[in-house]
Image (spheres, rainbow, N blue to C red):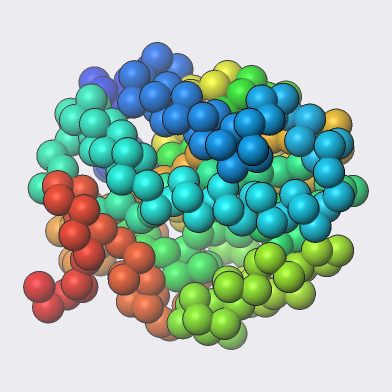
Length: 288
Ligand SMILES: [Fe+2]
């Protein structure tokens, strides 16, 4: 497995490297920097003008924090400006928006673990996005909105890329998640009661990679990598932005990373959350 530094815009075939498990770290792209600047503006707006973002969890009861994070996430995800930044990102790295889909961009908010680690700030256990029904062709991006420490980041358990992990994805339904479980995020305060696909064996941390970047420094990696949220025991809230890209022809033909252990049967339930990168229209699946 290889780590490429600042080469996303120099590799026309980068998706093939991603499908093979390679990771890209890009520290100087313009569109991700714009996305992070926009995320900061959005946080200030959602939290009624408060600009000390990393201390937000110290300024209010957790129920108020959840209410405002819910508002923030909804506004950010559905904002046209953000979608246009993702299209500019595609052009910046030299891929054709006509050939790609994206799923809605997300702003993640991870405060101190003891304050909140469920619902809107769920600390993801080690998982592959494919366990949540994502395509094997899914390309993940992830970037911090402020400089972070290893104790605030996302970990990638790189050694498991080609190694099967016993997991509960075969019993998990994306359709049930979208329609029943996901909308319950705001009511999960003290513990996560929503049903997630989980590892059913101990995960070794021997190959765990924690990349502590600065604002707008972007990781790109396969959604089939095992990854998760590092429990944030610092007293600073972590903000990150992520979105996913999918090459349409690869999705429809089943190309992508090798599936070593995902058992989800209703992946197509997630197609309605995908949009064409050229005009932001909804993806209609295999029959279009
Ligand atoms: Fe994930």
